[in-house]
Length: 339
Image (cartoon, rainbow, N blue to C red; front, side, top):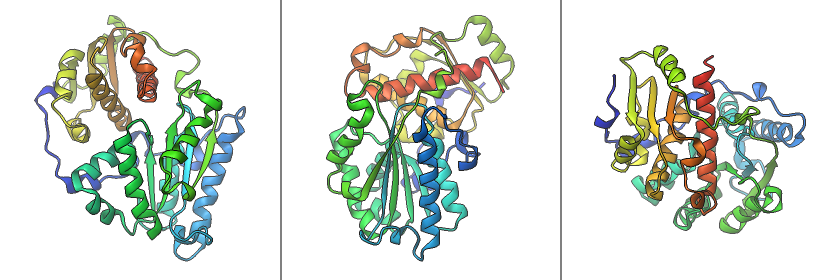
C-alpha cells in the first residue's frame, strides 16, 4: 500500500512544460469518436468548426498565423458551455489533429496549470517559453480571480500578436444569466486587451456525466470492499479525507500530478463537509488532477451534496465546486461499474 501522506515532491519549473499534452483520460479521443447529442446541434457544430479550423490552418503556409489575414497574429476561439458537454474532448481532439497535421508546436494545459507555470517561471520567461508555438489549448478558463485574470490577459497579450493561436474552454454555471451566454460576455470584458482576437462559440447540452441519475451517495461498505478487491494493494493508496485535506494544504497544486505518480488507484475514506474554503479549493484542484489522470478512485462517507458549503456553491467559485461534484460523480459511477 502506498502512503500518499509521505509524498511532497519537488518539481523544477522547467519540468512544468514537459508534459503539456492531453491527460490519460483523453489520450484516445479524436474528432471522429466525439458523439454529439443530436438534441443539441451546437455540439456537432463546434466539432465541425474546430475540424475546419485545423484543416484551414494546415492549408496555408505559416499555419494558424495566417488563418485570419485581416488580423495578423494568432486566432482565438472560446468554447463556452456547461459541465459535461464534451469541451475537453474537443480540445484534446484539436491537439491531436494539429499534431497529426504537422502544424508546429502545440500545448494543452488547464488554466490552473498555466497560472502555476507563470508563477514558477515568471511572466517574461513564460512568454518566451511559448513564443513560436503554433497553438495553445487552455482548458477550464476561469475568471473568478482578478489576479489570475490579469496574468492571463498579460500573457496572451504578449503571445498572440506574435502568431500563437489559442483555443480556450470554460464552464457556464447552470442557471447563469442569458442561458449561459453571460460567461462569454464576461470573458470578452475581462480579457478586453485581446477580446477582439477571440470568437466565442456556445456549446449547449446536459451534463453527460450525470448519466440520468447523479450518484449522490458514496460507496457503501459492500461496494467499497468489492472495489478494493479489484485493485493491486502494492500500487493503491488509501487515505482518509481528513488526513488528505491536511496534506493538500502543505503541497502546492502544481505538484499534485507528481504526488500521484506511480499510483494506480486511490481510495479516499470518510468524506466529510469542508468548512474551510481554502481547504475546499485545494480538494477541488486535487479532484481535477485525479480525474484528468484517469486513476480509478473510490470515495466513502458523506453524501456529495454535503461536501461543499452552500455559500461556496453559490459564490465566486461556484463553477469550480459544481465541476468537482460532476467529476466525483463520474468517478463513483466508474467505481461501481468498471469497464
